[in-house]
Structure formats: structure tokens, C-alpha cells
Length: 390
Image (tube, rainbow, N blue to C red; front, top):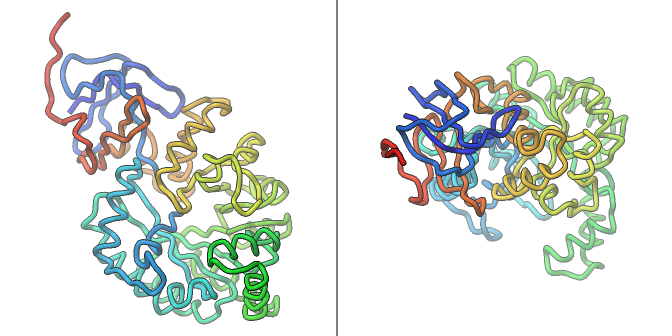
């Protein structure tokens, strides 16, 4: 099947009026001009499918209101459609092993391990290639054994180490954290301050215990061949420690200092697309646009909204040294490289035909995964036709 007369976002350039042939689910040929047969794009832009290495959306789909549980089949079907409609063809569902006042049982190790097993069992039936990103809170000791079981079962594809204790990492600015918590829970700042104080006390652990948890998770990942990521690195020391443990990705570094060390140590940095789209972090931390301008941003992740990825790519393309091609790699080729997905991530010969098309308003009108349509608004059909000569 030929896709003809599209603006192709190739790894190194944008090719107007190009064509791409799909055969057996792979990209079999690319030309820099239109061909007379096939699906006619009329100049619409064709991107490689986005690879989202961190999306928190499944937890919200499973519990859209506090203590309102939805079945996995309903949650996954909804999220699957959202992702495909955002141009995401590979998605790592981020599910967390942690317990806090906000999350209750939703992130307990029993609940999370059950969610992971259900996700793994259902992922073959959906449009997008769904994978599992297990977020391990280093203060949650009991989850180590459960994580080992899941790794032994082959149900986890990525692990990240996080510590959401207020006063460091993502929540290092306590005053902003308290204001955000008050707004989220609809309580006074005095009440929110008490909640934060309680959380700090409940999560306190000796440093040797935290380090032992981190080392054990790193050992498990290495022995199972699963990539390890850090989360919310806020100092050079923390970034160096994570590199020493074998982390290949530094997720959401919160300071320039930490991002610089991560890059120097060979880690890829990942930041949230909503941050890049908005131009600022809601927590008052490092701006993704600032990191990009300093050459310290490698990967864009949905974080909590897949629709933000394309908008973030467009925003960063304005300042990227390689324009749209360079910004697009942040959501495609770079996460593929970091996660060892050598069969996808670019409009390149032999790669999987994971791709999507947008119209002049940046609305995703068609998404293919492995050459098969997984989303369409009806604008483009896959019925091939021959162009009539003018």
C-alpha cells in the first residue's frame, strides 16, 4: 500500500510531497515525490508513531473518582482509544508501588501487582502496543518481593525508582506543594500543611534502607534485562547515584544541575509533554523548554495527558536546531533507542509501519500500527486509488 503526497517527518528532515509504501506491516519504500497510485494525502503531515514511555492515565481511568473502581476492560478500552487518537502507537502504562494519603490503596503493592497482571493479559486485544512501566517508591519496602515476582513472570518492561516524600525531588518546594495539595483536595492551606507533615513522617526511612531498596531493584532489573529509570533527580549527587545503579533514563529532572549530570553520565533525560506545551512545570521545577534550549532534553512523555505530546513537539520545533524533525525524535526515535525498541520509532526502511497523519489543524485523522488502521476520523480511507493526470 502506497501513502502518496504526504509531508513526511523523516528522522533527519521534513519531506513535502513524499510517499511511503507499507508492506507486511513494515515500511518498504520511501520516495521524495508523489506516486500516481495509493492513498492520497493531499499534503497532510505524516509522523512516526509516538512512543510514550511514561503515562499515568491508566490509574485515573481505573479510579476516575475516589473509591470509584472501574473494570480493567472499560478503563483500557477508553485509554487505548485516547492514545491511538493522539498518535501514540506504543505506550508504557506507569503504575506505582507506593502508598500515600492521596492514593490510598490504589498504589499499594497488592493492588498494583493485580493491575499489572490484568494489563499484561489484556494488552494483546487493543489498538496500541501497551507495555508496563512499574514505578517503585524506594520508601515502600514490601514491594521489592512483589516486583521480583512480576519480573520473573515477564510482566514488566520498564522500572523507575522514585521518592515522593515532600521536601525533595518533585516536591522539593514545599510551599508550592502545599498550595497545590490544598487546591487538589479542596482544603485550607493549614490542613494541607498538616497532610504534608504527616506524609513526611510516615515515609521516613534510614538512608541505608533506601539505598538497599534501590540497589536490590537495580540488581533485579539488570538480571532480567529490563531498563531502569530514575525519577525526579534534583541534585548532581542523586543523578550520579542513579547512573552508578545503571539507570538509562533520568525521568523529569527537576534542576538544570541534575539534568546536566544525567546527560554527562550517558542517561537520556525525559520530561513531560504538558510541561513543554505549557512552558512551565506545575510544581515550579525545571521547564522542559529550558532543558531543551540547553540541549538537556532527549525524550518527551505524556505524563498525564497524551494529547499534549504533539502540541509539545510543535512548540519545541520552533527552537530545535533541526526543526520539526528534531523535535519529533523526542517522542519517537529517542524513546525507542532508550527502551531498546529497535523495530520502530522512525519513518525508515524496515521499521514497523507505526505512523499517524494530521490535518492542517493538527488533528490526528489517521493512525496505523503495523500498517493496520487503529484510529480514523473518516477523513482518509485506506482504499487505494490512481491519481488522474491533470
